[in-house]
Length: 290
Image (cartoon, rainbow, N blue to C red; front, side, top):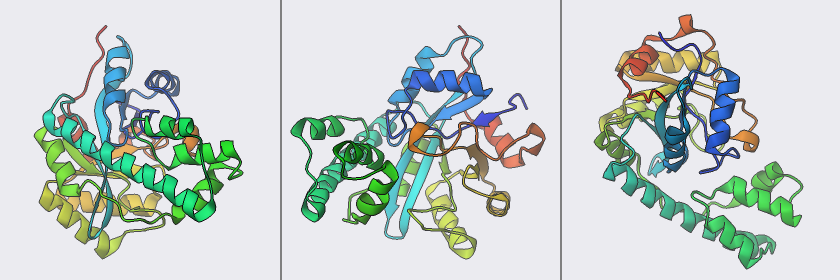
């Protein structure tokens, strides 16, 4: 295997991370990661910036994206790897996902004002809505700025997580199809964790995977910062059983999440499972040449 340290799941300020794409390149270099992927939520612009900024001798790079999906059975985060960033299917799904996020953010503003009397200036509201992919961390930080919460964590847990209005979401089958149409590989992110406190294992996980595989899912993120050894073993067993790829990612968000870059629980090259080896052999990788 040509790669000793990989991290295939991280976010920039294009979605809900705090680091710029340029910062990510610097941090990846400093951390000693030799293959990485940026997987911003419903957005690929950060990947385009990184591709143009990488130089000869920099780590190899895989185009990534993370689509937030939901259907009648629950929520799913579907990662896409090695796709053509100019493919219409990816661009169209990005636009749809962005529209859903803007709508949800506007409803969160209305919820905070109605339930708690929290109001914000027109300028600050416009700044949030102008973001590529506004989310809870952006609103939480603004609530701290206004003194409505003592910390970002308090803002999310005490206020924002109470908002449960039904929203439109990208469906998992649409995300998987769009990734395939762009010649990419679809992977279920942090599979043991659905939404919030949801925890999925055993038969429930098996049924979830069978459904997603029916849509064309090709891999699972078996190595993840928040998954211990028992969960990793279960996901590797499912991957072996269903012939799925395996990936490894930290889900790094900068200061918005207490996860270190490179924290994938995949420590040594000799530990690479067969599904990960196959993934690295098959996915399209960008090699900086100059």
